[in-house]
Length: 269
Image 1: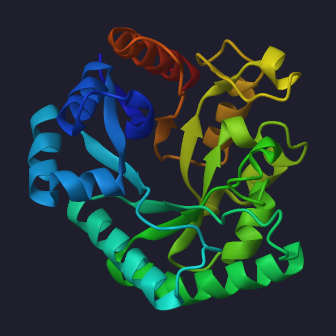
Image 2 (image 1 turned 135 degrees about the horizontal axis):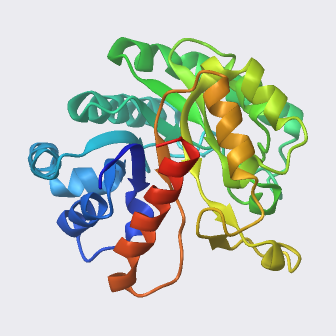
């Protein structure tokens, strides 16, 4: 069974090679795939398009195509990265490219200054995305993952993008479920949500200050409530499965197939 609006992130499929990642994603019942930009570049855009067509997969988004907003790369280099990421999205029919801010801890940069830099970055880069009909989506992450980003809420992410044309936010429920304001923010900021990553989190390892994923519905995240809130707010985009689990490769297809079945149930399918 192929599940509508169900995508799987290439990063968690972990096949032997690019072609295997795409084939396994289709075999797991997904209709979309979140591709890694560097993997697409290595495989070739035209070869990627042919492979996707062969397996009947759309591209829900592209990640690992742009460095973090607060990276030390010259702004001209970052503009080139964004322009190329937009080109990849256009070529593959992807609606958005994933962006993270990077950390500030230990850098000497205050949160106020980081906010200023991020707002300026999106103001400069957004027109590149608009020209390609693509959106740059910022991902807020769980506070345990401060080494990835200092942005931890949906509201903060939208504040940094300025809700400008060509920008948006990725909602990973595994990163945002703890926020007491997340349901209100989903309702009021729904037009800024470009894509959703769906997963579950082990409450036992959280108490040990570890962030471990579980099969959808087996962990701490109130998935029916969150998915229900997204749908009620008018969200109609992809649900990307980003459940990175340690398991044998041969077990991964059934794991993600089961995730698709559970998502379909959440969506009333």
